Amino acid sequence: MKSIYSHHQEPAPFNFQRQITHMDLDSFFVSVERLQNSSLQGKPLIIGGMSDRGVVSSCSYEARKYGVHSAMPMKQARILCPDAIFIRGDSHRYSQYSQIVTEIIAETVPLYEKSSIDEFYIDLTGMERFFGSWKLAKELRERIQRETGLPISFGLSSNKTVSKIATGVAKPAGQKYVEHGQEKGFLSPLSVKTIPGVGDETYKTLRNLGIQYIKTLQEIPRDLMFKTLHKQGLELWSKAQGIDHRPVIPYHERKSISTERTFENDTIDVVMLRNLLSAMAENLAYQLRKGNKLCACVTVKIRYSDFNTYSQQSKIPYTSADHTLIKRTLEIFDKLYQRRQLIRLVGVRFSDLIGGGMQINLFEDTEEMVHLYQAMDKIRNRFGDHAVKRANGMDAKTIGRYDNPFDGNAPILLANRKI
Image (cartoon, rainbow, N blue to C red; front, side, top):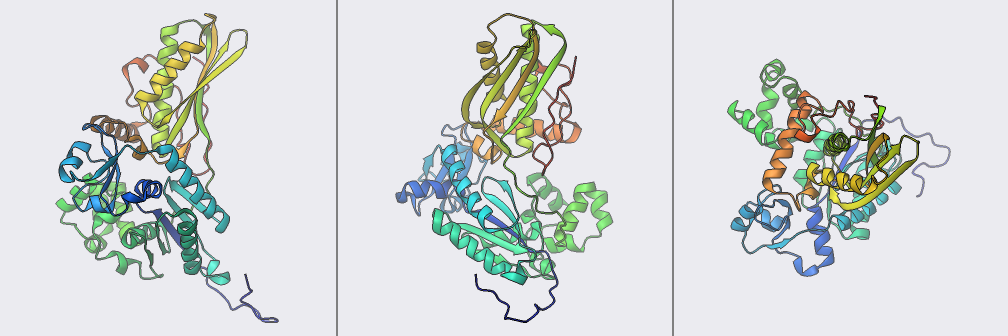
């Protein structure tokens, strides 16, 4: 790249202001399917579980015009858009394309955070002096589209919240720049539902308070929002003002999450061991969902009283669902535990992780199962990891508290408590 400075000339003083870009692959799963089959272009396309009890994982903009949206029961989607093309989806292929995009971003920018399988935050602060944040973001978007064939949109502003909302405004296949000092004006006419973190319940609460647009939220006293919605009210008020000081967290692909238990007294109690492994798998599955991750490999480890250690792994479709992971964990244990000898330690590990949360899981899960997990996780988020658990794990003593293992650079806590 040619230098922008002439010889013997000092660069002009520059005021470094935050420049945060949010990039989001448009209808990612749909776009990948259309790359594989060009005849799907321009047609309403719905991806997800194929049975009537399944749910929609993703849908094209053509299907959205009929009211179809992600997490909707597939039965309802078929009624709203009967002429749509329905596809089960291929999570492995989506993961491969996500990795290609990740590698392009990693080669181009100094600092990025991968927040899901199809979303990225990029910190371009300081690039104005050397290249130009807007120009760099545009060229990065063009390169991704050129090399992958996938449409992608981005927003650029001073923080994560405004940039993510700007991306939503720019979609599909667009770009939006919100200049410093213009954040409140940009947000003002938008619905409060565009604020990240405002789900159906929060939106309903805000509407009951007479708050439909961000402008109204901007004008409400901060103390009143705290009295009404407590900590969440303060967060929403700050986001409505265009204030968000969260940093872009350097991205490191985590490969696995695991836990193990060493016993005070070696045991051959198979019922207790199976209950314990169920509880361990259940807790790790919750950590996956909490970290917006899915796994494709389950490993069980056994250490006998003579310290000989054995492990066995099994590949599975990408998931973060308790019922799938617990079942596979116990199947592996039943195959692995053949010596009928006292056991000193057992462990469970989930690996081959990718971002994406429940959205890929929706290919197989029913609406009832998704709602069950959402309800259970809501209780855990509020009252702690072990606030709710399956019956067969009730007899297993506390495995150990987990910090979110996907929270920035926080290490995985390997629970290794004695009982």
